[in-house]
Image 1 (cartoon, rainbow, N blue to C red):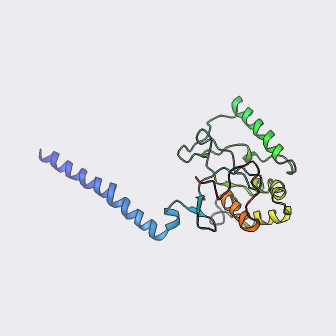
Image 2 (image 1 turned 120 degrees about the vertical axis):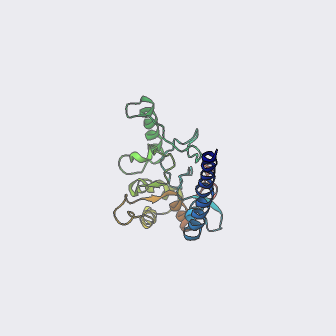
Length: 207
């Protein structure tokens, strides 16, 4: 009985320390030192309205906005509660058919885009929520965006280049652009994209 009581005491202390005290202390420290990161790296527009997280990809349907990688997270994609890939392998006919369909659609939507379609624009990431594109994947979309916004391609290209994020610590990872931040930069410089038939913009789409 004495051994059982000691074991129960140790268990209770362990639960309190590791399950309550430690998480509360670490949460408090992180909120004090890294407030934005600890709160989900939320992004607000110029009006102070939260429009998403810079860590989570989201869909942009208007032709005047940069589009992210496709998403296999959830039934309709970009579901932050169902992060994951399609788990379809390179020999999957379903994957080949889906990519073929995506290539045809994106070529139709970007008739003036130079060269072949970047693979990242027709293939989902492992998480389905990748918020970034390579600079090449963003620059490939410049002609469509310039036409939709009635501005020169050079001005849009300069905006992309100004929003390229370098390698972490100078050598980790690859240069990239955050699609949400880039689209907000578009709105700040050129105003909101024409609505057309599409329904979503950085001001309206929130994940």
